[in-house]
Image (cartoon, rainbow over all chains, first blue to last red; front, side, top):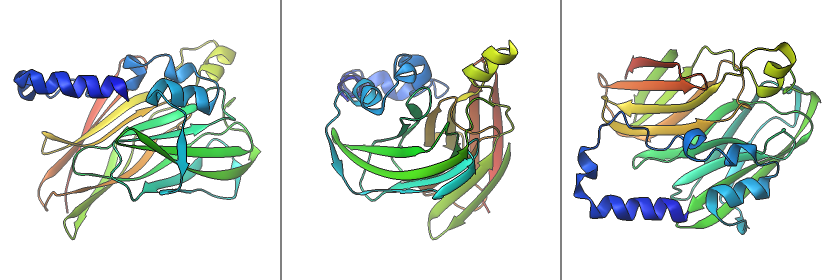
Length: 150
Length: 98
């Protein structure tokens, strides 16, 4: 992600970064990247977030039920064995593609559980960014009752 | 926010559930109410080091449930989780590592 690299470079140049107030949002992408949350497809969202759509299969695992009766609550568990800096969840079946974006802090372990909504049967795609390279893992979930229209 | 924080073998695991209705844009339009959902969550160890950070969309389930782990922390330390929602409300919860 070019923007992030730029930020870290400028943070290094300005040594004062260390004394920035801790209340400062490190990266609330809803505020910093409003366009990302309106992207309709995974590839468009990936382009917005990472600046590329080139991915490599593997190193990312997605655990989710094969069949979800209630699309409003789908428990998923995602993990990567790589030293990822960003992990994002996408799905093409929801009205917008981007579901959640994790920043992995220095001592954070990129293994997260979350419950998400899906409108209909489709694929959950999880992308991990490692040094500018993207790794992808996916899992198809059959949804009986959609969970986005409430 | 209900929290459970455990340390085992140098790794701290946090399980937490926020109470939030999470009204998506679609539901808000149908019912003519304001959309609202948690957009951002950040967890800190002893109020300083960031150990978890996520930006959420409207497609995270109501009453968001999260689980994460990080290296470090010891019994007695605190983990603070703060969430912010679309309408600007925020809440801070603290859990002690057991």
